[in-house]
Length: 434
Image (cartoon, rainbow, N blue to C red; front, side, top):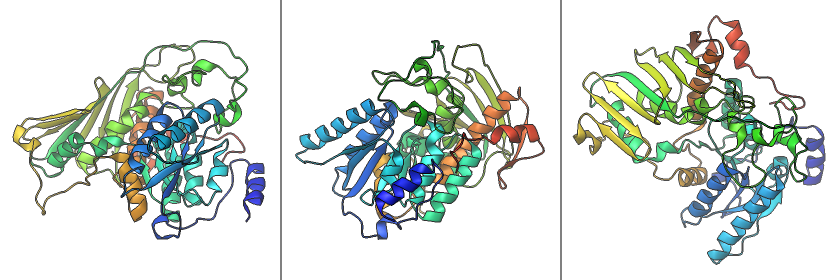
């Protein structure tokens, strides 16, 4: 189908459309320079874009950002200018265009991969469409808003044979990898307990509805969510890139349980060896939901989950980190540091016969190199999905006033609880559909 015909057909159909896959990037006859597009150019999008600019310049990577996309045109223009300035400073004249609709990007044959840094209610829709278009994907965490969306994204990635890197960059840190290496090799004996701590949301949002800015497509930003009047405090600042309000509005985001929980539960799963195809058998949590104006996600919370291997996972608010407690000691990791009851283990390297975890020191570079090689990166789609599943189950239990949820990690389904299952199934506003 010609590009003009494709756009006319797909845009008229809303978000429900299919693109034939173009094949694996590594084995196709595409650009020798990997050409990328940045979708979502807000606070996190700017950071992801800069990481790609810096990593792509390396000879072994050879990737360039050639397009940016955002429903907020002022942000898209800022991003484009930043890309052009970066390449000029490096002595290259690289053209970078602006697209207002991600579907226009996905129809382009000159795009090899996309970086998706939108609010999480859009992750699955854009991710599945990008996979169907044969694009490799760097997707900000949490992987998706809901568990069923994650299941569909996993299918799309594997069906189309593309590479997806979840933006759980802690896996590319020596501190988290070394501690998980200690635990996975039982150097401190059998794992008994995992303690996860995440920060606490705070503040409130007020304000009355107003007309959205002229260069901001608020209807498309809303996407699959219920349509509600525009209020700047629950979207993002019209000027600047401070922390956006949508991060504390439940229909766009589940709060810190996914914002930071997706990072910390990912490490808990990695150390427990349940990160690719498993998870807890039960989850129970309580949360605080005080009146905070337009903000309605949880604030404080406590949780407990049980695995079939006997490991107990506890969660609470605090300084972000993960502590593994074993029969003979403990090991702890956080951003910027690690500790252990046996300090010698912090420098120990596994032998060839022991568990050697995937090594990455640069998360974005690992994605770009993996896309070139046509292999899974350090945090592939299944890992991101399983970590996010734990987050969502905690959130559902909170909303059910601390009810214990029995979970089948093989079937990926709640056992014997229709009310909980209904909360897990999140409907999308028409015409958006997976």
